[in-house]
Image (cartoon, rainbow over all chains, first blue to last red):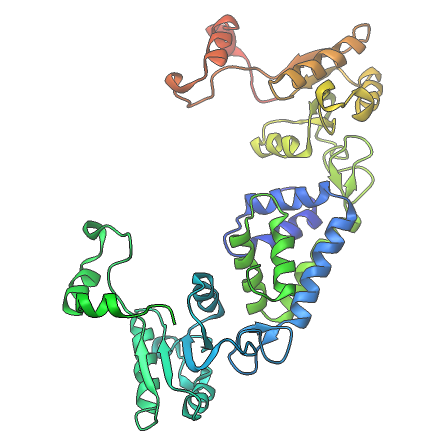
Length: 209
Length: 209
């Protein structure tokens, strides 16, 4: 109990359920809110209520949207031939931030994880397979985390599509750009040597598509 | 624009008006909110709306309360003889956190600052003078920041009460407990030498009252 005033404690509690906000920061936010005119809190809560009421997943790719189909899927300049498969909308936003990817997406909503009891049926995989089997789709770019779960998910999807006329690629793995070789972990370093690529081929390829 | 979805951008904007929350953290909070069931956002906004509607300053000391008089002023175990004068409720909470102060408070709501055009009339000073002049009050502990504004405010209040039967004290200033002398700023260090206190007297005093 920080204030002995239950309403303040409740508000501190509400803010501290948010990621990265501890009790101390939460109290700071609550006091800030109390120092502003009441309209500030009205606008704040109304904005969040609107957000939650009107935002839902895009029927095609799973990205957040206010419409039926999100702005990426409905953008005629984005190629439907290329589908980038990601675990979450956070990952989608991270790729969008690069500003280099011009295809569309498919958000799985998680990774296959037998340990956590999450199978293919719990993810948006069936819908991805449908999309991948349409004649428009030429390539799935698997952009999943380089973990056991990520690899298992990629493996499962690739296996399901083994007979289909669709190319399956995976984002490249290796040392980070600008990273110091000395501080790269051993696994990444040894894999990046195993998976070395032709210098000439790399510099002739077009990373932006 | 982070998401090209105006509702998400609005919510990111709302969170980033809070102190210490940048656009990136705000997006993280918004995505977290969207990942929870709608009831999460309902509870969150309701808690904040309740807070803002029901919390107001205590009529006596200026602390936040849901009642007319706050839990500190109405606590019979807190001495009304001693009033600790603070700039803000944040400072009051900081002193309460120590768990050692057993008197009451008076929140000024700011400091006198001619530069920022804030005079005694803009603060809860007249009310403090009334409280100080009642026979119950024996001592005002001035716990204001050791700045020009803090000192000016203490000076103004002390001057107004020059004829009154009330003792005016000021929290001690000097090197921090556990702080390294080497890293203490020159002003604090030189003042702490000027204002040195008798070792025997200090160790016989009772800091907890």
